[in-house]
Length: 200
Image (cartoon, rainbow, N blue to C red; front, top):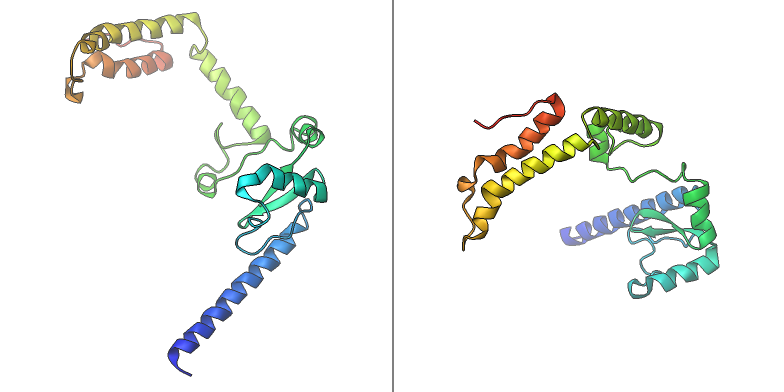
């Protein structure tokens, strides 16, 4: 046997093994999900769902498998809810169970499920309650904070935006006056320390 045919033979064996292992993995995970069409390895159900007629394809699958079924886009399973009753049951009657979000492995590893944006369930409720309490203590929603913010924006408008509207070309970034740069930090300082930074 020449080297090219040996390499080809090994590649065919590796590809066959990958396809068989992907098929076995999808069949074993398919038992925990609602019924649906058998996915092909690697491409899933792309051949059964026409991109030009996605809705019609999903409605045909609903007629065959019921209002809740699973399709695969590549190796990723997607549970499809078809019909008012199925959607109502999932999003209203069982909202707590279906309120999760897709997790990103990198963000999950970085934040470990903490933070208002990345947490779920009871942890999310506690973090949200805590964050809203702290923000209210800093003045969120208070009239005084809105008035201070408006004053700062008016100052920026008077000192920078209005004079530059008459220019034919926009000013360079180095020509930006200090009120425009200091307004965000001044507002942040006013929120956190309840003191205002006066202009030098």
